[in-house]
Amino acid sequence: MYLAAKQQMVRVAKRLDDEQLRMTCPSCPAWSNQDVIAHHIHFLGAVIDDDVPKEVFRAITHTDEATRSAASKVRDEWTDAGVDTRRGRTIDELIGEWDQRIATMPPEVHPTVDAVVHLGDILEALGERRGFDTALVEDSLRKYYEMTLADRIAATGDGVTLHCADTGTRIGAASAQPEIAGTSYELLRTIAGRRTRFQADDALDWGDAPETTRQLFSAYGWPQD
Image 1 (spheres, rainbow, N blue to C red):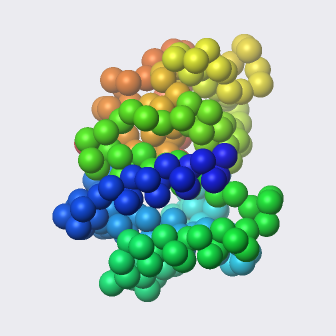
Image 2: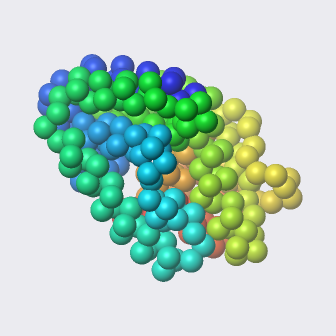
């Protein structure tokens, strides 16, 4: 799964000209498209080295809002530093570093979710929303649900099942839970914080999911409309 995502991202990166590489990525507005690739390589290396600050995950998984907010500050500073150290490198140099890190990657280390989400960021910056492998999207959606949503919603006393309307896949254990439905791609982009609440309301069918669940659905909080 990870190698498939990496191969697709490299294919996209290699077809971008200098202007497209420098283009601001709307989903990550502090970064260019090239910065997004640099970030993923930094994150991959930290995962391989078991050197990812605990705050990176705490910022999107903890049930306490104050804890999440404090962790987000640490995460953002760490993430930005990883991008800053790679500024000035060519895309070929970045891909070279990527290849070197993958050569040391243990089989159990595979940050597929990060690669798939950032591949979507770059493609959407180019005005593209097609060409995603459905298996990659659903795998990433399932992991986001398990990592960022299930426990936080359970802490409110509620539950929810995700229904991928394009494939029929359901993610979530209890059939009696309210369903949130949409294409697998839009569910992933929303849960990964890439859609505003207005966009989510337009793309998803919230069904009987309560407002508390809807507010928690975006792992990074709802971006401004």
